[in-house]
Image (cartoon, rainbow, N blue to C red; front, side, top):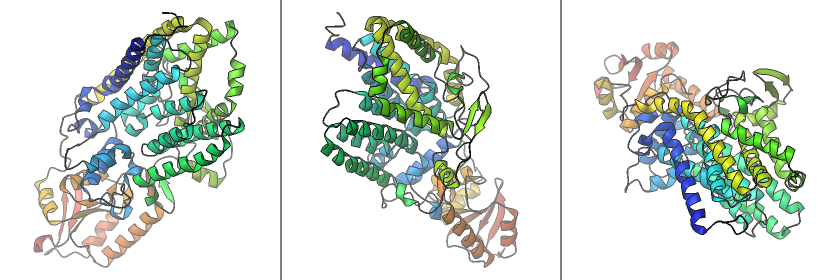
Length: 552
């Protein structure tokens, strides 16, 4: 069938189905099929994926067992005075809220495995739709969509940042920016997309929001339905605000303290998209910045080959690329602005900071809230891949472009095999049920007599937070031993002062178990407790103070 007549509906449907199946297989190829079992939590808690999956499981466990609160995303038992909401632990409120509503009907111990598989399928579907703006050829759309799905930028997030696997929202946003003619319901679709994104992750929301701003401004400049634009802004903002409220974003006030390095410490090295250090086997590793985000911006050998093919197409063909750039100038400006934010004020090339600009303190504080800035490369990278696909189609035709994309996909898959194998090895040997971190039988006895457990002094990601929190979650105890992405610094300071004052005055909280984290706290308790009534003992390496234990 000729390109002019277009492919049949059957061929088009098969193309989409194949793309989505292959996209869904991305997570399975990275972590194995066991992640689909919603009762299997061993792969999350075993350890090699880091502390974040543990925090997700803890947050979800506390949240699903707690009574409904206001706003719905509140999670008071995980943190007590330091508690905030599920929004601040990246547990995907889009799924956590409805699954909690269904808790009496179905038991779901973990949903991140199915979430990542679904994200892969949606990534391919959105890429298939995006590529459809350039060609209707089934092979080109399917091969290109799978290439978009097998992106280290997305797969790298499967190693611990599960909410961020939702790159499909960025492809959907790019599609809305690029489709032409744009439908009358453009604003409604944006409101739906950004509302959903606000229930997934703050970084994805910031990126998609910037793309919406560029699209809104572009449509306003073109003079299209100004009245509709005026209605669109409050509608989109209301949808985002509703999603943030549901997830509990507004539960924190005061000065927020992000955990980890600040803005500028995890910036994008300009060679990072070409650095195969973590994922590639066909290209060499490059000397880029080696912070905790490194390796996640590599595009893959197949994607780089596609970009090179696009350069050849532009150099050898009479393509009207300047018109496309001018038509989407505001979108390009937004993408470049996000690139600049990704690079930060500390410009690095080849692992060396070559330029460092001063940053006002108030700008630094605001940027710290999105400190993992390297991620803001993603929208530009996906836009570049689409532009390369469009250039290849325009230069050599859809059928030949399909072969080019298929070859690029094959190259990408070969390049990523070693990286995917390393990821699978991280969880392959994890037991289905994780080992008990506090095995002493005394803990079970303590859990019967106390309703909450404090770690003193309190802190975010403090000493032994995981052992304490896992014990508390498994026994139904509230705790302030937490790992949150953001906490209220004023609330933490107030809590520390209040607990210190209470312990100094020998005012023990009712039915509260204490784990003492430092010598100063130990000395305070040791000088004031009653050995005839209270227990002060080391248990599984933790110093435990149980008021009234001997008088129970």
